[in-house]
Length: 153
Image (cartoon, rainbow, N blue to C red; front, side, top):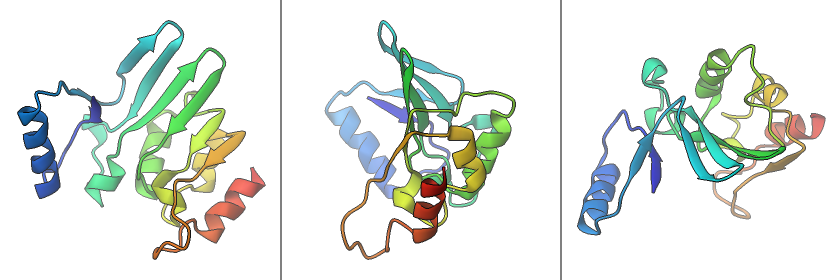
């Protein structure tokens, strides 16, 4: 099991740790700069969270695990529940690189209005965007502004 480095504890996280210990599940805690190899030509680049740039605002969401799966010329960017503040930090971390550019984008935070800024989407330039969301959810996800930005790119 692979999880992103945690910077804040919670009851849920402690419960998770207890279950993992009880069931003797091996965990790999990762952060920015690490690579998880699956097999030849298939790996994940861990892009976030970063111990050097912890986002304190809405800590659990903004320090979600963000990784890019790469298989030959195909890639998927998984963005967890990051919001605009984390997107800006990630853009700053990877400026002057193309590492965010991905074939597919798993849209952050269920298409919430707090994510998927124009600058972030311009850096990713996905051909396909996927949003994990329940029909008629109480949060109104995905946000119409996010859908508009995705249509634009």
